Length: 425
Image (cartoon, rainbow, N blue to C red; front, side):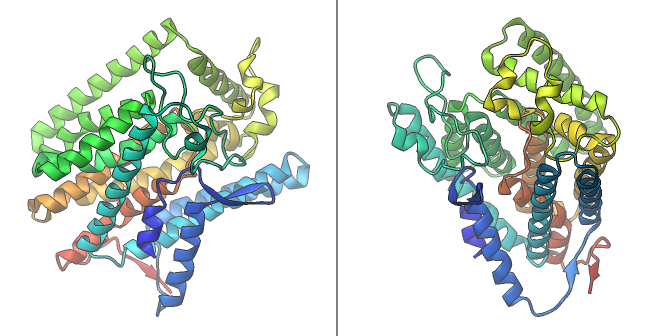
């Protein structure tokens, strides 16, 4: 059942059925099946509830209370309540996954990462096929029918991109989301190639990398470059690591300045649309800085806060702020955004403190490359949120839950019990 869940992760925009105007995504169904399977199989009532889950729960409670206030005052209640329920659903998915993974040993967790990489390889082969095929409604819409949840690019994968070729969308709503997805397996495999190069690993990597390039997804590309830059920080130790952090921080700062400068020199329609969406969210935040307009309130209020002279924002794709952090500021204010960032930071703190304090465990290059790959994948995800606003893809929760559980899993493998492991009846 877990294998079925992992195999469904690349299906970002595949809906099995539409219920009440909402898509029932394939990954939701496999997660629900997994939840039922674990419930029937579980023999005790112990629940793994780490600090990260508590931080996420605080965010959920805040969103819930604000939704109740919006219902009371009659402001966008339906949308706020719907988004609150969806966010609560992701909390349940996260809790399910960390309770499953926390019971694993290293080899079990590694097995499912390998399955994930292999299914990404197969999906990449299909993406390459997309790239070289002429425009086709059948291929463009294959396993990409969740138009109730996403704006599926009307031209399928044939969007203006590199010269006479189109941008591939794979199984995602649009190319940039597919690029952000493929950056994850590339990050997971990067340390494997460094520590133990083989022809098989290189083949898998080059196929995924080719499909990744064919998306022409600039945010995904930059997320992958960030992973490459961060790799030395994980590998080096002591003073060398500190020097690497300084150099990487310098290059990242230069890169961000360059993005801002060169991006302003040649604004295409896509960039203009994203900037207008982000400006709308910023205007919304300025007017509601503390609590925001409520989760899901951006699409309701966007016309009121659209920048002067805006024309692109009125299109369907104007429902997006194109930046998760700015959208959280607009919808949940400073309070909600801080709670979300605390959740993301606690995941990193738990992972990194374990990584730097267990030198003996990390003498095993297989375990070390596994841990480093997860860390790099984590950074590709949080970086991609600067241009892709959603956390509504299950591969994100797959990575975050593995990050939360790896100290427990690997300590178990070395016959150790980590101090962080706590259970509640």
